[in-house]
Length: 286
Image 1 (cartoon, helix red, strand yellow):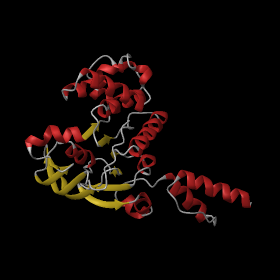
Image 2 (image 1 turned 90 degrees about the vertical axis):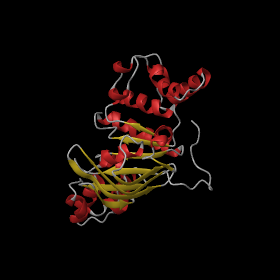
Image 3 (image 1 turned 45 degrees about the vertical axis):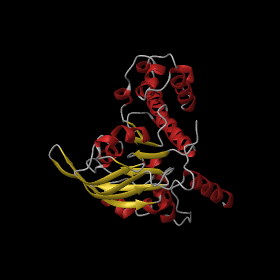
Image 4 (image 1 turned 45 degrees about the horizontal axis):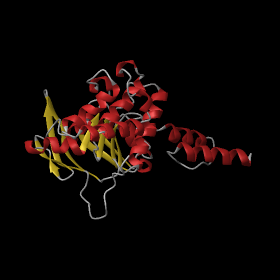
């Protein structure tokens, strides 16, 4: 797939939240004065419990919602300007929790072609983009399949391919693993890493810690407030604060703590690979 990385002189942040306030359906201040900048090419994980505002925040990024107060700027475009809505959605694609909600046709390749067709592209360009998107998500053998006959993980890959075919620089994934089994979630995690390595800005809404630890930056919301922001190491090392916001501590942190409580010195890490290395080191000294 094309490398989406910006050149050095293209320094416009991918997404800016400027004191954003938003209420809906009787929920007052679902977002309460959110200030955030996401840089192009970053991988950001947004965490929070039910009612924290994380999905509401996600829907502001491609202008499904617009602020009651404050501004959201996507690729330099103010989402509150009605003239910008379609431009914003060309820059920022969104993958929802349930991939069935994004299926619009009965053939995989036709479903992926739907977005590019609405961009008014030529048949040749659409064909090229569909083939490229299918290859990127490793689903080229399913081009003529019926989407609803696929597994949950395969459907989620098709949903991502439909977004990729429109070539956005930003992809927002709202709980993409929530309806998948562990194998399906692992496949989606690999895909997110690959897309980010190709230069696409990934903004992941999740409650799975094993997904969040992949990110460059973790943002935590609680009752509509931005309460934590930093690298995974910075955020996940503050166990007391995480529990205050009703979030689980990653397994690697909990396991390391259990070892240290028993007098076994081991590096504090969120990385499964680093933890494996530490365990191998300990084993070799026994």
